[in-house]
Length: 323
Image 1: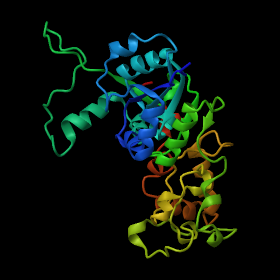
Image 2: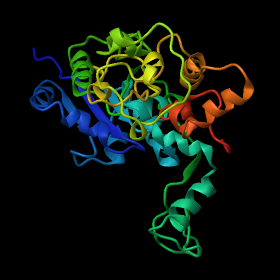
Image 3: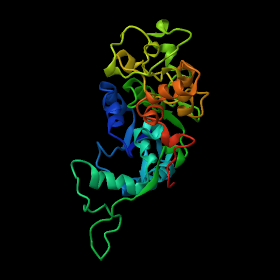
Image 4: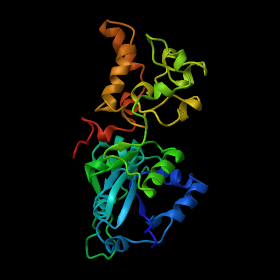
């Protein structure tokens, strides 16, 4: 008697495409996946339509990997359909996990975003340019555009998510592990994050050079200082989110001589990444009087973009002005 191959699917919401690359970057292992599982839906690689998914029986797909943030009403419609058709949903990548960089749009309302993108950017610079309409009106037969949601949402604000693969993008090794576990029936516990429980600092190749106490008198950026590529970024005044970010990425950015920016999300005991990042920064600020501390804060370029670069949409405060 032949065993049924597990059925898996992939879907892409609002994202840059890097998460799709994390699957392609599995290289030869992807051939093994195709041999051991039926990929029933993958829009970038297979010719499939909404109607094809709708025709499946509920629960017919064993696991669907969904990447990208929820930005459009069409995303909501489709991920709810996939939730119904799938036994398990895995949030694939930082945008699905936490909202990602796209979530920084929640600092503005939808009209401001369209005004900027369609009328104010240098490539447009036309205050009279029409804004996209979700309904063409006047009896026109043009298809309606998908509508922007009031705010960007991570996937689990719309459907129940069974597991998370963090990373912007996830390492192909992590993707291979997650997909292989699904194929072989090694199913993750609900809420599993395919990453370490401890902070990235624990695996950092520069850990031995990190002092017990760090006192910073000015926060610097990479371009305005000569930094030592052999020692911890923090005592050099260069902000690194390694102490508050989950490990499991093999310190890829640090290996490339760039500070961590937090794409693997908060450690297990942290509810809000930005709150943890603020606590980290405050703990290193040298000075006690208000004027000194204010100067230190002013030396941080774009604080919100630093501490909430990947997680604003999932944060306590950053769910959007017109949600």
